[in-house]
Image: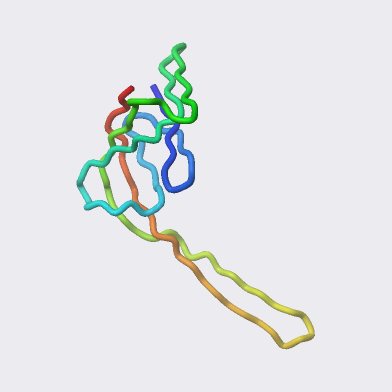
Length: 103
């Protein structure tokens, strides 16, 4: 059984026991969160597709940790103009573990 959920502007295919890194969710480590934007649930031959979400369906997950991704380096340069610009960015994330898929 798996589900397609939407959180942080992105979509993820998840199953029970999966660990995924999503955009930062303001929750304490070890707490349980409920993700209510479920777009699809598949259980073998039985597939339920929402329009756009499934009413009453949710995914229960627990927060494992919070952290930051690897640094993305940005380098801009204009040749022959003596212009160089270095920048870096590290995006925050929340790692969650899927506990249950309810429909």
